[in-house]
Image (cartoon, rainbow over all chains, first blue to last red; front, side, top):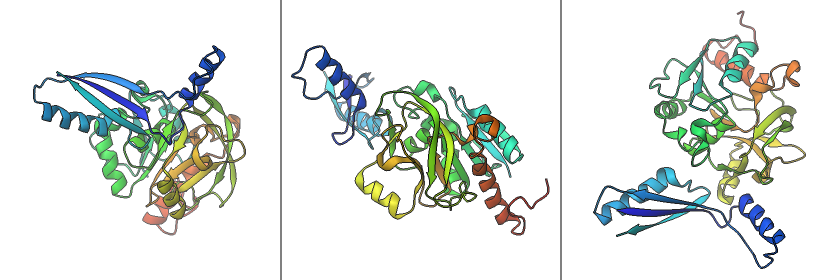
Length: 80
Length: 235
C-alpha cells in the first residue's frame, strides 16, 4: 500500500523559505502571489494490505519522526 | 569528573568540545560513539555541533533515535549534567529533553560570527560562574537557529527561569524573544546555539565560553567535596 505524507509548517510559525520564494515570484512578475508556504511531501510504501493498520502506523511515524509537531502539521493519504 | 563528548556521523565540533574540556578544566574526557549503550561512567555529557546524519529530514531528527540517546535520557533524568551546543541543541529539542524547536534563520543565511549574549540564568550548573545579566561574547555558526515555541511554552520558560541566554543587540536568526539558549525545568539540561567551546582562549577572540566548563566542574566539586569550590582543589 502506498501513502502520501504531507508535512507543513504550522500556520502560526514563520516560514522564511516560503517568504523568500514569494519574493522571487513577485520579482518574476507574479504580483498576485499573496502567500507561499513550503512543506515536505513524502511517498511511503507499506508492506501491508490492512488499511487500519497502515493508518495507525503512519500516524505513529509522523508523530515520532516525519513531522516535528512543535512546528509542523502533517496529514496523509492512503492509495489503493 | 568525567566528561563524555557524544559523536554522531556528521558531528564536526566534537574535537573542539573535547579540547575545550582539556584546556579549561583538564578533567578526564572521552569521545562516545552514537552506538554506545552505557553512559553510567560519565558525570557530564556534551552533545556537540555539526550536521548529524546530514541533517536529513530536520536537524537532529534522526540523531534523536541513535542508541546512545536512550542512555542520554536516562542520564538527564538521573540529574547528570547535559549540554547541547548548536546541532546538539537541535538534537535535545527533537528528543524532547528541551522544549521548543529550531527552524531556518529568518535571513535564510548561515550566520557565522561572534555575538553578544546576556546571561539570563546563572543558576544552571553550566552558568554559575557568570554574573546575572553579564554580557559575554561567543561565536555562532548556524543556518537553523531560529528558536520557536508556542506562547504557552514561552510563558512557562519565563516563569521557570528557563531562558539561559538571550542575544543582545542584533538577533541573528529571528529567534522568539531573542532566545539563544534554554534549560529544562530542573536546570541540569542546557541547550544553546552559540559555541562556548570555540571561545575558550583570547587567541580565539574570546575566552568567555571557558566558564561554562569551570561552572559545571565547580558544581560537581561542591557536591562531592563541598569544601573544594572555585578551583580550590589541586589538580
